[in-house]
Image 1 (cartoon, rainbow, N blue to C red):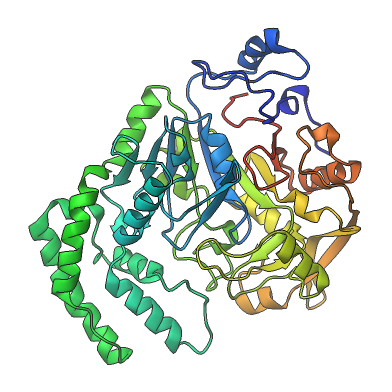
Image 2 (cartoon, rainbow, N blue to C red; image 1 turned 45 degrees about the vertical axis):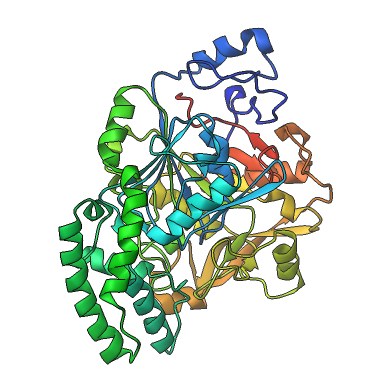
Length: 480
């Protein structure tokens, strides 16, 4: 059983307790020590210099990473997206106002932070510019000193989207792709045919690479898929406009991050999707086209792995999945409908209805192992309020055998049966709770059971969609 130390449970994000930001980057009022001793005792916890924190999803995405990143951003100086494309989406609710992000790190809501898009991200310039414009309409103007795009990030081109949709339509068994060109873009990157953001700075090089790509892609589009070819001049003209607007934002993210590290800045790395969608370690082929696990935070930004201090895994208090693929704990009954309705389970990117099910401890344990998690952020705990009995899968059964990890064989992954344990539910609305001790005993027990099963403490517990509806039990930016 995990035993909580006082230093790990006596802080909260209830804004009645937030005092002020100081030079160390973190200042709250301890519920035991009081305001006069808090700063001294926080420093005594061992925070020295900068800290680098990675945030990843532990399930199939849609775990609520946007809110957690938004919460932790207040303690960071730099927020960096390290993989994926606009097939991901973060939904935030701040003071009752909803923001949806697809490419820009959600930390952009803080005016004093620097946000970066790393080389592991693939960027659709049109989508990015529309997102910048939408934020401007909401009163958030972006400048190059607040947003940097890696010169090594690959660009999603119109032919990528055409190929993505054509391939999905031709398949007898669908993968469930978003049709946004993600897979084909990553294929070009690995195949050494991609166009990078930095190529926009060299008009002659860009034109040369685009000409070669259009010629090859049109052959595939027209001959294999019998589709309509893309037009070189149309794409070239559109990207000249994109280049004019985006060039000021393009730079060397790796060098900038290293400079920040040496200057003692706090850095937050933001992943997209979830562990079970990892191209290598997920439920292949029902996965995304990039590595979603924490190790890719370094590869996708050019940041040395020795400099990572902690990895926070975002875990929804139940499980959801969008699209096709195995889902051992899926509920197709009334309870599943209740979770879907109460949790507003629709994809931020596609609007697709999410499949819902009980918490999968096997998936959680896999995430701990694959990411090296040092803390959990448990989200949407409030959605479980009103359920008399909760279930958690602590193993699978297949062919008379009990297994404790997701099978790599996709047919086996689809055939496993979850082995559940029952836990008591609670009836009380917990959205107003701001301290762990004020949660219903059953909710506390549920969290502790997750901690015991995974061997990882909960650092954050979310009890509602708004920024304020959060309990910060342990700040990952404080070094211990």
